[in-house]
Length: 438
Image (tube, rainbow, N blue to C red; front, top):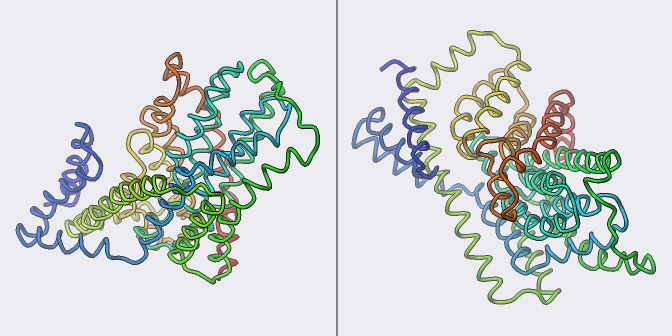
């Protein structure tokens, strides 16, 4: 079978199964079963699929995934994340668009502690959105910042998706996690600037909050010192230990879990019920991720064995594109895929082609990895199937229509595109911190 027919069979079957609504993990499992039988030699191919499955989930580099997930779940279910947001809200008084500013700052804080885009958006939407709409905020300015900062959790460690990308692509997980910090903070600063500028230009979209000003500075700063700064020590422990070279990603993730549990215990927020919920949710999320990883290993091997990978790579190399043009082409493909499929599927489809091309062209893998994370983050906000758009629809009150959610996301999609272009033009934004580790 010619390579292009093999590629068409694999991708056509995959999109067909997704089109009928089959979950991603089962879609790739089905594709792998067909591919293993056709291209790997019938029963022998199925046996190879089983061996790949065992090998793919026994990699020690995947250990940070459940640990990072557990960090966020503990902070979420014990309520410490809510206390941190309330402390930030008390610190900011009588500012146009105050609650939108709180959404950006609070969402970025929780992103640095949870690593979960869905949890970030769901929590901020449930806590902030009803109050913002009640106080007369325009729906687009109420929902937009919440959805936008939800995606930052994909960039700022602890990010389970960054660990997964690093493992699948063969990129240093520690450097990839550290590399997302500066782009994530730049993105948060741009969101904040947009909110404040829009509130100045259009005061009716976010009325000045009439929340009472605290009588003295200490009363405003005390909740922040009590409920936010100690939690930042968890982030500092995770990132600092990796940046200093004292701990591997797995060890730093373990440090983060211990620090999170210790913090909740010190706040007397850790209960048996909260711990049980955290462990159950961690197991659920981790099993889904690891199940997908099982499928991805065999998928890449089948593409390679069938000749689809080498054929497609030869075709692209024949175009003699420069490294920059290759990167731009990869990003364009990710941006288009982000409109129709989820982030894990995007990685599984593209990495078998992207990484050999990048290695042959001498493209910095950490830079490319961060660019891919930003491009996939954009997919969370792009219609029609952006995941965070669906999450916002689930937490928004009934009067809010889907077109309003799309409109709310549009300015932040443009901002993220601008940041993506900035990272392409200034690679040191992504690789500056990781190079300090070398």
